[in-house]
Image (cartoon, rainbow, N blue to C red):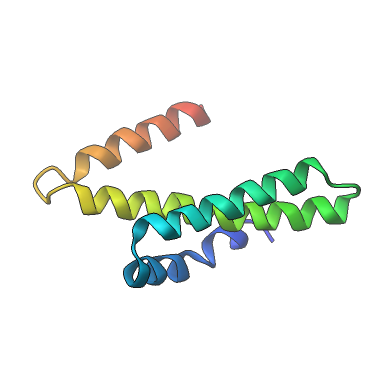
Length: 96
């Protein structure tokens, strides 16, 4: 499955956040992530763990996408690259 669990729902989260607002949809994504995390901790076998990780990935993908959308809503075009450069620097630092 790979990254499909987190990338496939991104357009749905984006459109839903346009319709109902950023905050409620971010809470929905957090809920998916929390439920998936709880199911991962309670999984009894590998199939349940994989299914739980898919649910967790759906929530995590929504969190990552919506945070980027919220950052773009909060910053002006003049200072637009700064928040993304700081967040990408943290990701690269953690990966190394």
